Image (cartoon, rainbow over all chains, first blue to last red):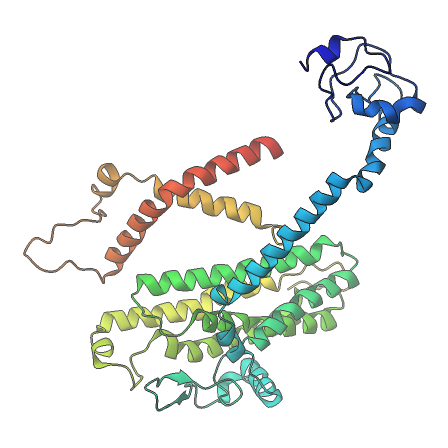
Amino acid sequence: MQRMAYSNPAPAQSPPLHHPVPQHVSTVPQLRSPPPPAQQQPQASYGYPQQASQGAPGAGYMQPGFGFINDPTAQMGFQVGKNAVMAGHDYMERNFDRYVNVSALKHYFNVSNSYVANKLYIVLFPWRHRPWSRQQRISNNGQDGLFLPPREDINSPDMYIPLMAFVTYILVSTILAGLRGAFHPELLGVIATTAFAIVIFEILGLKLGCYILSISNESQLLDLVAYSGYKFVGIIVTIVISEIINKGGGTGGWAGWIVFAYTFLANAFFLLRSLKYVLLPDTSPNSNSSTSYTIARSQRTRRSQFLFFYSYIVQLIFMWILSRQEGTGPSKSVA
Amino acid sequence: MFLFGLTSLLKVCILLTNAIAILSEDRFLARIGWSSNVDPGFGNAQDTASIKARTVHLITSVRTLMRFPLMFINTFIIIYELILG
């Protein structure tokens, strides 16, 4: 029945009772010349195509285009969409706690001012720091081994400094690029994505190494993420100082390399000392004897080698990638 | 906003996973001694803690788990490359 509507030379007052009238605008080009624009509105319901072969197809589409907001079906569509979005939002809020451990995150952000200052000092100058072990709270409900929060224990890793350092690194890199005249808005995204990908890569490599060497990881994943984020502090110091000294020459030049080498060594030492208690758990007195004495000597040296490899070589590669900046300033000195 | 330079990285990772997934168990891995079901021989327990055993176990688990999803991921990437260049 619908096919007959196309072949009928329909007059303007064709009675709608004889055949069903399609309510949508069909896109089959009609062989007749289009009606004059003044009569388009009442003829839209007959299903004739609104686009002319030449002329203004845009004007033909705009007329029903502006009127669709007042259309009750469009209103209903809006309502349905809004309900769907709100339902999805509620579902997310209800299930957010299952995917993200909020209380564990709160433990990492439980820092104080003195902790932040001392920790930054340790990250940049770790050679005089004496006790590196994390303190454990001996609690009475059988849950010993619960680590103290960063507020009370200087050796506890936190997520505040790595997160702030990450964001500061992105902003400082972008500002320095802007000072050099090399800024474009995608630079923010590129730097953020690069740094994010490097952190993820590093954690994946560490997890792979832990699995292959049968290191049972008692500390959480967020600890490793936190330790991986401490190198951003050194990188920020490197690029800021080399920017001041080189005056736009990037991080090349002997001053930049010296600062980079110092921060790299400081970060590597810091990681070596901190991760010793995470990756080589054979000196902790609280662990069971079954896990600490079945570690063969070759395995322990292998683990030490792995820790050394991770702290120095892997960090060197990643810190070098992250602190690379091209210099376009006037005083670009050669290394 | 996050996927600026990451598409090439993602494709490299997918390619490497494909490379691991297409290793044939009996034609290749058994020939070089990297098969997953070794014969214990003298009746000892299977050694599961050496580096080689763990890497073999890792390769086997990657092959078992990722063979099925990789079909869809590869198809998706092929269509993406065909359409968007």
